[in-house]
Structure formats: structure tokens, C-alpha cells
Amino acid sequence: MLLPLQIRNTRREGKLLAERFGPQYQACAARPGFSSFGYEPRKHLLDTPSLRRLSFVNTFTMKKVTPKGKLTGDKILDAALDLFRAKGYDNATMRDIAARAGVATGAAYRHYRSKDAIVMAYYRRTFDEMQPEIHKVLEAPGGLEYRMRELIRLKFEHFGPNRRVLRALLRNGADLKHPVSPFSKESKPLRDMETGWFRQLLADDGLTLPPGLESHIPEVLWALHIGVMFFWIADDSPRQAHTMRLLDQGMSTVTALLRVSPLRSAREAS
Image (cartoon, rainbow, N blue to C red; front, side, top):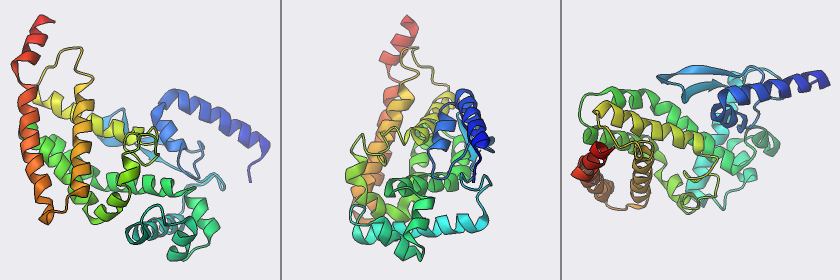
């Protein structure tokens, strides 16, 4: 139990952390059971200020989450994914999820305040799992077209086992205001991270863009890749062959457009 002085100190510390780390701290604070006590950014594999691993602690105990607590959280998350596949996202309830996980409904809410929080936890877990391979793609030799294609294929590979879950979320994902949508404010930390990948690919390729476009092109590439992901989720062709064809042709076209004369002319004029 927190004493009043501890609460005041925690709030004061949280304000300072928010000022220092900005979106990183806000993303951290949005997690269920978060406290600013013990918050510690850790160096990300890509070694960029905007991509940090964060350490989370439990609000109720003021201690780091125990292995048992993490095990329970993972059990609830996996049970939720099973139900989303079987019943759909909208038809599954937190009570259903708790029953499938073999925990009390209150325990499920202590780990995740809503189904949306569970989905966001799934996104984060998947991104965490693929970070080492993302790093390899970003550092791999090869041109821009090849590395953009491999980056998206890597996402297919990691999200593939739960493609049916993503299909159940597709309607909500297309709603810009829904928390689980890649366009929502709740998804901004992940969106910023992915945009950073494309920004790094452009920089490594040596493609110099006009000052007015250099900050927007990575965002455009991110939006295009989300379109490909949506197509992949809905693609019923064998082994998503239509998506693979779209990906190959799309990345070739995008790369060519980035190198066309209008961009060079704009750069020379600036």
C-alpha cells in the first residue's frame, strides 16, 4: 500500500520523467500496473533515442513484475488470442478470457484493464520477439527495395501464426480512432518505431530527399506497408500468393518512384 508521501513523490517523479522522455514515458505509463517508480529506459538494439526498451514495475507492490506475474500475464494473453480466433474479438469477454486462462476475472483485469490492452500487449510482445531479426534486416547488405521487402516479409512471418486474430481485428483496425488500430494515438509508439525503420533504410541507401519531403516519406512508406499488411490479412489465396506478388511489384514501383527525376529536380532546385 502506498503512503501519501509515496504517492506525492511518485507523481512528482512521473512528471519529471514525462518531461525528460516524452512519448517513451507516456507509452510506458499507459500499460496496466505501471508506476513511474523504477522506470528505466534501456538501450535499444538499434541504438536510437526513440527506440528504447523500458522496464516496468507493478503499481500495487512497487516492485518489478515477478516471473510468476509475467507467466500469468502471458497465460491470459494466450487465452485471449485463442478466444479471438474462435469467437471473434467483439464476442469474447474478459470473463471468457479469464475462464479460458484458469484465473479469476479480477486477476485478468489486474493484468489487463481491457481487451484493447490485451491486443496492445500482443503487438508489443510480437515486436519484442522480432527485434533481433529486424536489426539484421536493417544492417543487411542490399538495396532499398530488397530491405523494405524483407522487413515486411519478416512481419508476415511473426504475425502469421495469429493471422486469424488480426482478421478478427481488421474492422477495428480500419477505424482510425479505435485503440487497436495502427493509426490510433495508443499505437503511436509502435508507429513511430516502424517509421524509424523506414527512415533508417532511406538514410542507409543514401537517397537524399528534398527538405520538404524528407520527414514525410518515411511516414508514407509506413502507411503503404500497413496497406500491404491489411491486404495480407484478408488474402485467401494459397500461401497468400497474391500478397507476395503485390509486395514484390509494389516495392519495385515505390523504389523507382523515389528515384525519378521530379525528386531530383526538387532537390536541385532547393
